[in-house]
Amino acid sequence: MYGLLMGYERVIHIFILWLPGLASINEIFTYFYRVLICLNNMIQRIQSLYLLVAAGAAVGTWFLDIFKVTLSNDQVPKYFNAQSNFMIFVVYMLIVALSVFCIFLFKNRKLQFRLTVLDIFLAIVAIALQYFKVQDFVNAFETAGKTIASSNYLPGAFLPVLILIFLIMAARGIYKDEKLIKSLDRLR
Image 1 (tube, rainbow, N blue to C red):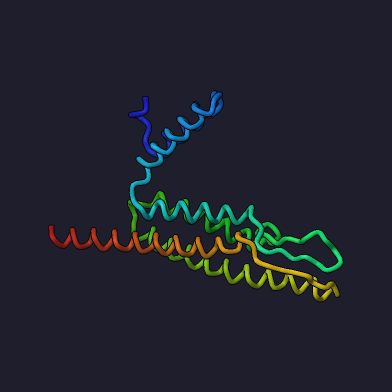
Image 2 (cartoon, rainbow, N blue to C red):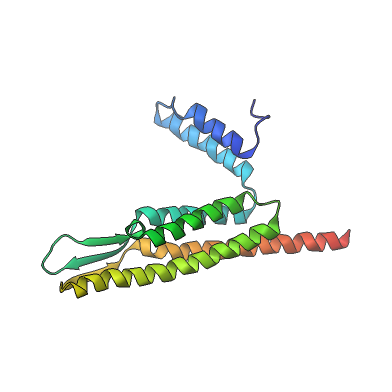
C-alpha cells in the first residue's frame, strides 16, 4: 500500500492512521521513527532541511517571549512576544509559509531561489521590526511615568538571527545546485 503513496501523502497517511492508536512509549518512539524515515525519503537535499529548520524557528518565535521588563513598583514582569504585535506576527507567518512552500519547489530551482531571497528579506525586516517594536514597548512604560527596574532580551529574541542564517545557507545550497545543473547541461 505504501508503494502507491508518494512524499507528503505518505506522511499524512502515517499521521492519520497511527497516531490515535498509540499506547506505550515504545510505540510512540516507533511511530516518530517511521515519520522521520518518511521525511528523510521526502527531503533529500540539505537546503530543504535548512528551510524546514528556518520555518521551525519562525514558528518558535510565535510562542517564545522576546523581551522582559520588570517595573520598580510591580514585581510581575511584563513580556513582549510576537503575538503582542500584529505586524511582527504576520511577518513571521509569511516567513513560515514561504519556507515551507520553497521546500516543495525543488523541481523549479530558479523560483525556489528567488522566493528564498524574498524570505531572507522578510527575515531582515522581521529583525528590524522586532527591534523597533521592543523600543516602542519600553518607551510606552517610560512615557506613562513608570520606572523600569530591569529589562533584557530573552532567548526568543535571537531566533530571527537563526532564521536568517538558515535561509542564507538554504539559498546558497539552491544556488550551488543550479550552478551544478547548468555545468552538467553544458557538458551534454
